[in-house]
Image 1 (cartoon, helix red, strand yellow):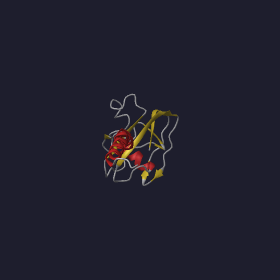
Image 2 (spheres, rainbow, N blue to C red; image 1 turned 90 degrees about the vertical axis):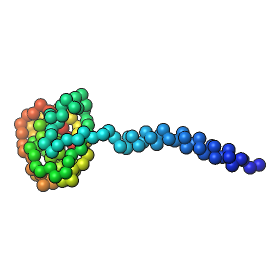
Image 3 (tube, helix red, strand yellow; image 1 turned 90 degrees about the horizontal axis):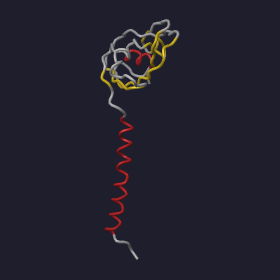
Image 4 (spheres, rainbow, N blue to C red; image 1 turned 180 degrees about the vertical axis):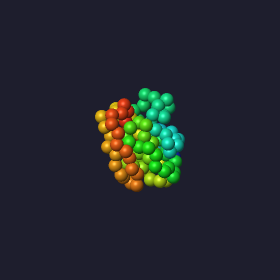
Length: 133
């Protein structure tokens, strides 16, 4: 006995309908939150009101940011330029792009270095830090 082709179509349609919420959720997760549009000079300290209470957030760095002030290597002071720190860490290049920022506790010291064409300075104790991904 063969099954009704119309019934098979209805079953396939119902299966697809059940997958739509899952697909939508995956799309939201893959896209992530909308990044905060920042300038080349902005630091975590500058964004304190915008990101208050968050331990991580995403920013969008513009292209063609020259070198700005940055202190540290891998972990940077919160008054450092986010976009320049991201270039130093190799997260973005001169074309800019999305950067995930993780806010950390302050460190006792920060060592400067030269990476990816960006020089960073050393600094003593500072009350807030961040790293980029």
